[in-house]
Amino acid sequence: MKKLEAIIRPHKVDDVREALLEAGFRGMTLSEVKGVGRQKGHTEVYRGSEYQVDFLPKIKVELVVADGRVETAVGVLIKSAKTGNVGDGKIFVLPVEEAIRVRTEESGEDAI
Amino acid sequence: MNGINTGDTAWLLMSTAMVMLMTPGLALFYGGMVRRKNVLGTIMQSFIALGVVTIQWVLFGYSLAFGPDIGGVIGSLAWAGLNGVGPEPNPDYAATVPHQAFMIFQMMFAVITPALITGAFAERFKFKTYVVFLLLWSTLVYAPLAHWVWGVGGWIRGLGALDFAGGLVVHISSGVSALAAALIIGKRKGHGHEHMPPHNLTMTLMGASLLWFGWFGFNGGSALTSGSLAVSAFVVTHIASSAAALSWSVTEWLHRGKPTLLGAVSGCVAGLVAITPGSGFVEPMGALVIGLVGGALCYVAVNAKGRFGYDDSLDAVGVHGVGGIFGALATGLFATTAVNAAGANGAFFGNFALLKAQMISVLAASVYAFVISWLLLKALDATLGLRVTEEEEVEGLDLSQHGESGYIF
Image (cartoon, rainbow over all chains, first blue to last red; front, side, top):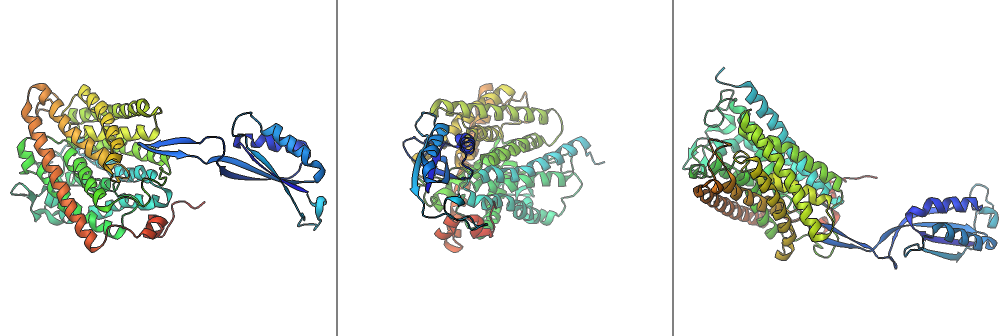
């Protein structure tokens, strides 16, 4: 099993969710995050006081998939989250040791 | 009965209620501009003035400001506890309304004025000390100045200087005192390197709108009658406010590339401040110029404060001090007896004596307010302490001073 952590643009979140569900990935977790990367921030001015805002709002999508489905999931994420401009985000793939469904106590790939 | 005019009385009571609403309006205006940990503390500083200054005014403040003159500088205590201030009109101030109506209209001015100062020391003033400051400032600065300018026998009134609705008494006095306060209390912790953007500009917009609304009573009500003078004051107030909202925005647009909402609402307040002293004496075109120049001038003043190194957090000096002084001098230029026979002509109508009187009155009011505020704040600093502790400042005024939070999500 692998965990995918995708940092994406906030306005792409609906596209990403729909594409993942369509491709058969049934669960995911979202969080609102802020990050700084290659995309430049912006400047805010309040009565002459200038503030450089570097951390931009992003959405982090997390999902755990079976080893054989990693490539599909990454492909779906890229296709649905891409705009082609700086700031589209990143995908990280991490190994997962175990997964357990609380209700049924199933474990491993059956639990995801 | 006794020459009481019901129309005048109705308008004055209405105006009084409108000016009352300006203090909570100011609270929201300032409250939106601070960080969210200080929203309630900031609002409270304005709101509590309704309590403290009302009691002060009833017990002795009104008497000191408007009571029988002592030497041109202060009223006596003959009207303490509103003794003799009843339903009969006082022809010296307002011949057609009950004396009590005039008294409570003036009370609302006394309430909002010290609250204006709080913008200079936002986010760091100890509440306990603030309440004492409120009481003493109202007594030692506001009451004498109101007497000089508006009281029968007051020396500035005798000078022929014009202040229709409180350019000197309200705006210059609070703006200059705000400068003294910002200098004495020092900068907020983290000022200059930490981000301190306004936490809720929609709140600031609501507050500014309430100020604009209330200002029709502030200036229009200062006619003390319900007729052509009230209408004229109402009209020029609106013109100047609108013009200043535009001119601040345009200046900012040219200077920074984007017009901000905070800029537009700051501009409207600057215009309202600038028109206040001349609102009963200038014509619409004069008001237009006062608004346009006032808005741009206050923009420049607010932007320049960084060079002086003090932390006038919400720009009480840049808006009320600078706008008030400009407005008082502009009255000396644009005033005309065509609007108000009881006024005088300004320099643009061939009379330079008025401008001179305005300059003297501005200087006197500024020096007096600055010196007394300085001494008062120094004395309070040495006894009660002006500032919250560093820990309390980091925690925020809401929790440290009042034990509550503005937002529970």
